[in-house]
Length: 274
Length: 348
Image 1 (cartoon, rainbow over the protein chains, first blue to last red):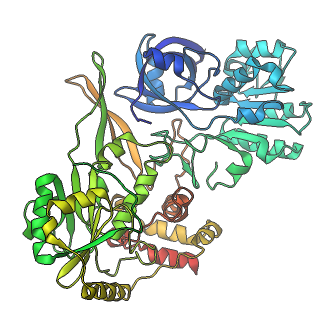
Image 2 (tube, rainbow over the protein chains, first blue to last red):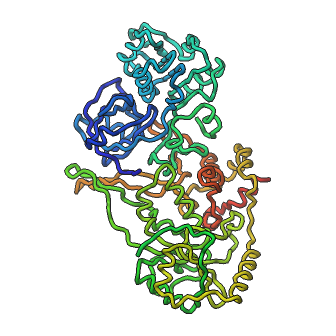
Image 3 (cartoon, rainbow over the protein chains, first blue to last red):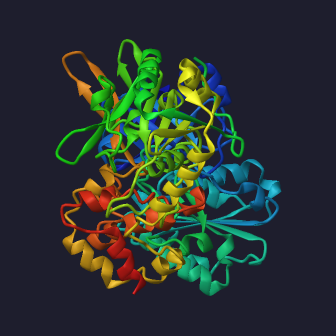
């Protein structure tokens, strides 16, 4: 375990919307490139030398080898510089860190994935994990909400998921803002009413901004989902990723080691959760 | 010289050394490796610094301003440098072997707590690179009005140290815990004898006397429950109005481990450095994330967080409160905030 990152190269930048892009990296070290394994929901510490380091959840699927993809919002110092980097630029990456989703426990059951805005970033990894081994799950529902149609990240991919008949993918926007849109307009919680899966054996993975969590969690509880089967991904300031620097502590847990994935039950018993 | 942390609990060797001959022993240790000792700095302040002269070594002092952690967890350190042409370069300065003399039981407990903290979630290579090359000669002490070690169960230590000296009338009772401690003793083995019956009696008398000298008591029974029940207490609000949020209590704490990681660039040479330095959970932007959300902005919440975390937050990992009762925070606070008083108010 070290605070020293591995060198990596930015090989591809994919524009998603004015604030978000998808960045693909490959490790310079061949052994690291082939050997880098992770679980959906884990994150890496991304370094831009001379600027700093930031925790970013992994957006590519764990079965895609040789590269990793990070979906990043232009939000702070490091991420703003990242957005301005040209392809073939050098960065540093260390990790993966965190617990990730307990996929072994999810296998064999139903899966309900609920994303709001950039919350799709870690969940895209879980979606790819589940679709890679589609037969290992029963029913799969994916619900994704964004502010407007142009804010639907990975729009092409998401629309392809809507067309698949082995899963149910439902999209919604708060408002169309006059842009073309033929899916739902309204809240994610409206779409939760449409989910037709037995509650038993259903794991729920939720990720989105704090206010999104509040509405979705209340709705899930009123629909009868178990707090122990609702998985949240918490965002906190992280500077080490190794349970030492202290910045990500919530109650008595380190988000970077004990999380970032917490069941709703574990999370509500932590003070300062939102 | 080799070094090993042998678990010899329960079969420690006890020896004695005449007080007048401690100088010879420390000189021998200082010939062998870097020796750090406590020295008087101001009127009543002490610091750990490199050994120069035995007459400067403080043998009867209560606490140093900064705990000894800075010798393996420095206030600021460069982790690596980076240049476009040469890539990453991890600083690989070879650490010289260091012995710190005069460490009191509370601070040795503090080191034990830091050792666990820097191992949780994976060993911190920068910490352990230095820590593995530090040995300790502990020294007994007498409490002042700030000492809380008895309440925090840190007034004795059976761990961490290599050698521990109990001050008696004419001699030090010497406990040798590790093979490395034995190596040090053997540098000057003629100075050490087996304890006499009279010295054992004196040791027991001294321990009893010391035990009766504690004037400050903090009741930590069911403190975890109380702090949880009083999470919304107005006491936090009240003290957070007095607190200056200067972070002094954190800078002097033997178990505060938080750090900040940042980059700095030397533009003339085109080198960037990654630095880590001590950080303080009471700082306003401590829990601020990119995009502007601050998970702990409120003053009372920041004040409360430090207390909760010292007393119960790390308890799950450490198996105990991480306060060692050294008294530094209460002595240092410019606003005169005293942890014992805060805890008493919560208990009322």
